[in-house]
Length: 171
Image 1: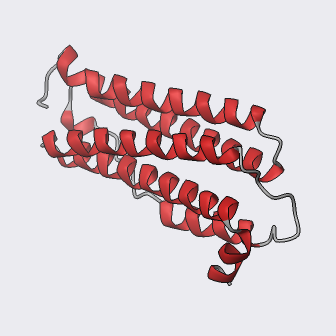
Image 2: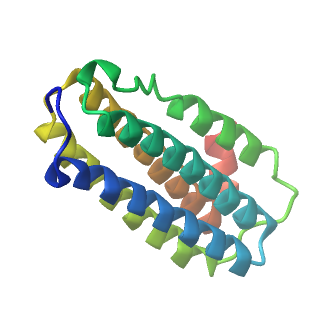
């Protein structure tokens, strides 16, 4: 990317990233609507809200790219994914006596993990192609977020499969 109006080829990865996050949000909202488990509903609503944050960040970054001036690219900052994952697991650990997810949630979690992993792979590919430090940082931020979502969903799967073991591991 240089100090000039970006081409459609240069903008396409940002459009794809925005679509990935919008599709993820739609999936999580639908999964939240369909589940009968309060825990799964809260999980999917949390992930939908996360996708909203990603949509906002991608839109802000895209707008700065559209200006065509590398010096004006938005700095996305650092991901707080690890903190959010720890906070989520702490919250989950307090649910021992609460509503448990059901086996049918497993399919939604598995699909969501594949979706998150696919998005992460796309962002990793774009990271390898990037040359500007802020573009690289942008993709690293997205990768950290997607990795956290996949880890969170894998934790949910473990919780569905064996809640007692999950609680033993997180005490």
